[in-house]
Length: 122
Image (cartoon, rainbow, N blue to C red; front, side):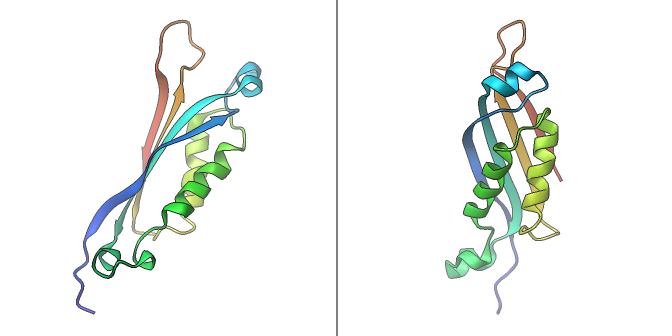
């Protein structure tokens, strides 16, 4: 076919989860709110031209990978992000970039903090 390759960012933003991550026992027992964004830099030209899901990264698979990992308690959101990326790599083309941002809403600190954040791009 003569569809010109063109990479673009696609993803899911603002996925919300109540999960039990944290270094401290109380955090893991009580749980807290997390917001996750995932973007993939991929060639979606086939999807763009032919309106075909097989020509892009499936959002459902992204959500499933994030949801699965959010249910498995981790001490650090850095480790959580690493695990999510590993699952995303099972279906995202090897030469595509993956960017993930995890926000832990109102972390237990001695002050007013909206969120602790980790953002990784590979």
